[in-house]
Image (tube, rainbow, N blue to C red; front, side, top):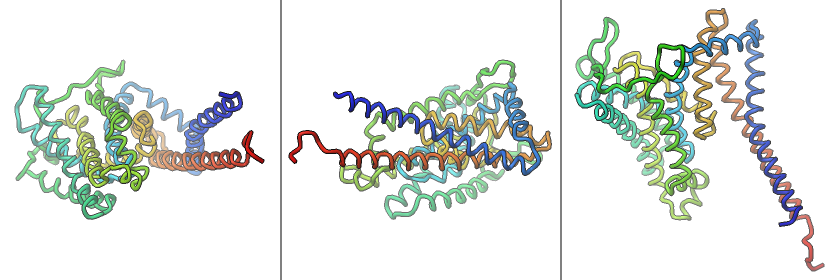
Amino acid sequence: MSSSFTDRLLGRVRLSGLLAVAAPLLAVVFAGVMTSIVLLLNGSDPLHTLLLLVEYGAAPRTQVLILNSATTYYISALAVAIGFRMNLFNIGVDGQYRLAALLAAAVGGAISLPAPLHVGVTVLVAVAVGGLWASIAAVLKAARGVSEVISTIMLNAVATGLGAWLLTTDRLAVSLSSNNIGTKPIPPSGQVPGISLVPGSPSKVYGFLLVAVLLGVGYHVLLNRTRFGFDLRATGRSETAAVASGVRVGRMVVLTMILSGAVAGLVGMPQLLGEAYTYSLDFPPGLGFIGISIALLGRNNPIGIALGALLWSFLNNAGEILGINDIPQEIVIIMQGAIVLSVVIAYELVHRYRATAERRRVSRRLATPVEGAAA
């Protein structure tokens, strides 16, 4: 191998590394500038606001809340990312996890089994319901060509209505208090104990955090170390090329959507099995849409998604201190939107720069005479 070739190769590696670092740095700078402008227009000091968030977020109690919220956000984002890797937009994670949590809570509160088996049955019900609900959009997409964006959005509305119909005292609900109803509480044998992970806090981190970590590892292995993952990524990059190589695209659509929905069914489990033990009227909504933002923020990478979930959770939980200091809490929503927008813009700019640099490199190589070629 010649020294000139080695130098060019090392140069391209260094350039690729610089571009990989440049994208998140550009995103951070852009988001910081946008947020600072909004804070200044509101009459608030950007540096003081940031210090307030950091100080409140460093408190042990807040750290537990951040980790607990990040656990649910992470699972939600993984469910979305599975579809994204195949260019499928599962916008229905919100409906899938809420319907799955409702039916899993009803089953978990109605049965009596030894602890591991009780938890396993409840989780299995959630996975099955989430996968089955997503399969409706999958079959419509594969058999009739219906856009999964439209069908999953509509199924969200259907799931909300179906959940409201089921969550009544005539069907699955019991009275929990004077102004709240929910499924029959899950007994201790069906609960997942917390973990004392944060020193100085009496509160515990959801035990389901370990499951979230395993899901992240499984996501990476499935997509990068299996034939199914290769077919999934190949179909996402070029459906025509995938068909030419023997991939059954319709089958991949169905399996990928069902897998995405099955993971979505787990989104409500940390809250259900680790804290609430019942599905009630105040069960947290909107986690599916948060997952979409975090999947975009993490670029569908399990590590990137984890960092995005922690950042999102930090802003949501630490942002509570802003209202106490006469700073509108809506600033947090603006910060989150600015971060996602800046990440999308930064990576697109870097992608275009990399493509342009590659075209120029190829042009230079083609224009360079080959040694020993006939005149």
